[in-house]
Image 1 (tube, rainbow, N blue to C red):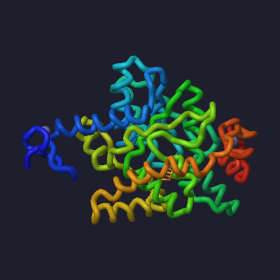
Image 2 (image 1 turned 180 degrees about the vertical axis):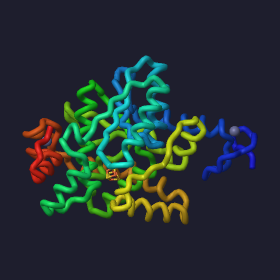
Image 3 (image 1 turned 90 degrees about the horizontal axis):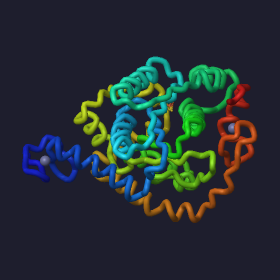
Length: 309
Ligand code: SF4
Ligand code: ZN
Ligand code: ZN
C-alpha cells in the first residue's frame, strides 16, 4: 500500500486512496485553510474565540487556528462552557486547559452554575418537577449557545470558531429535514447565516469538509491528547439517533455524508432567499439577539421560575 501522493508507505486509508502520515497532515491542513479562504471565514482584523468542548474537533481546530493567529499576530482565545454534567465535562475541560497551557493560548471557562445559578442536571430536575416537556439536550443546547455568544462578546470576539465537522453538519441537515425545520437549514453552511445583529458573534466552521475520522486521525498524528468521552445524555438525543442512522448508510454507501453536505451548499442560498429571516431584535429580558420579544433561553428559564443573567 503506497501513498498516492509521494509513493512512500501509506498508513492511512482514505476514500481517495492510501496516504502516508506526512501527506495526510498536509492534506488535512490544506483542506482547512482552503475552507477558510474560499468562504472568507475571517480576516486578520478579527478577534477569534474558539468555542472549546475539550473534544477532538475543538482541540484540532484550536491547534490550527492558533497556528494561523500566531503567524498573523492575531488575537485568539478559547472559551469552554461547563454545563455541569458530572463525570463528563469537567474532564473534557481539564484536557482543554492542559492543551491551552501547553500551547500558550488564553482561555476562559464559564459554567451554567455561575451564569444560571444551576447545573444542567439541576435545571432538568426542576423541569421534571414542573412537568415541562423538554429534553436535556434541547435545554443544554439553548443555554450553551446563549452563554457562548454573551461571553465571546464580553471578551471582544468578532468571530466564533466552532469545531463542527462534516459529520456534524450532515447530521444537523438531516435532523432539520426530518423535523420539517427547513428554515433552520438556511442557517447552516461554513458561516452561520440568517442571524445578523450587532450582538450576535458570527460562527464559523473551518472543519466543514473534514470528517470525524479525518479529524480524529489528525489529532492522533499531531500528538494532541484527547480521550473520547461521550456525554452520558447523548444516547437520549434525536441527534444521536440521526447520527447512527446516517453513519450506517454512509458505511454501506460511502460518500453519502459528503453528498448531503454538497447538496446542502446548493440549497442554502435558495432556502435563505425563500425564507426571510425576519428582523432580529434584542431580548427584552436579557438583551441577547432574539427573533421574538423574549429569547428562547429566557422563555425557558421563566417557565422554570429561574432568573436569567
Ligand atoms: Fe448537553 Fe446533550 Fe451535549 Fe450532553 S449530549 S453536553 S446534555 S447537549
Ligand atoms: Zn505521502
Ligand atoms: Zn433573553
